[in-house]
Amino acid sequence: MNKRDFLAAGALGVALSSSATATAPAETKGPTLLTVSGEISRRNRGPLDKALDQLLLRHGVTFDSAWAFDAAMLSRLPAVEIMPTLEYDGKPHRLRGPLLSSVLEAAGVAADAPRVLTLRAVDGYAVSLSLADVRKYRMVVASSVDGSPMGLGGLGPLWAVVDADRLPAFKDKPLKERFSLCPWALYAIEVKAA
Image (tube, rainbow, N blue to C red; front, side, top):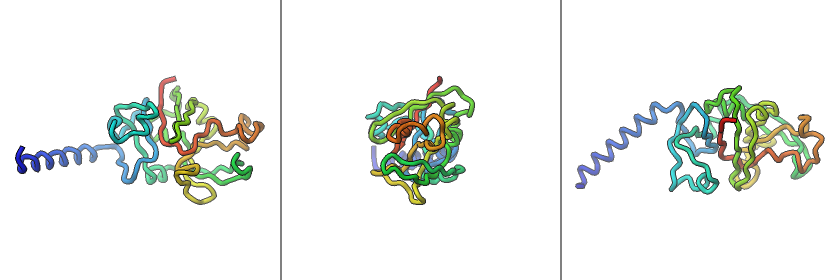
């Protein structure tokens, strides 16, 4: 292929990819923080990239399409605050972020759908629970603690967490056992039919 054909092919590729992203429901502007895949009705990214999606691949996540959230997309969802006592220092901390049910609805998961979710953390920790439990526990995708963004290497940048001090299913458990359903450094959610 000569240089002129190569440039023409490249220009066509850019034009096609630009038209494809222009019709996408929502485009991430920044780095993806959370990928939701599986039984969802909205999609804004293509299949798992075996070269670039190494963490997803290593954790056994596969998909043909998914919904990717960046920080701006998550921040546009209505936020709530909870104040659980954390197991790490035994003190209450103010956590803020959207309800996980709102995040899932933005990805096209019907609120009353019988679904099972697998929440994955960057360290490989994964927990499965029903969408009904997510709604019952009012699970939050927290992105800040005590007014400051949570960073990678700590509890963030995202933590799927419950207000364990106020929920009957958790409040009487020993502090070290209250957060077993709450992966910090959350980066992927797989949605399956129950």
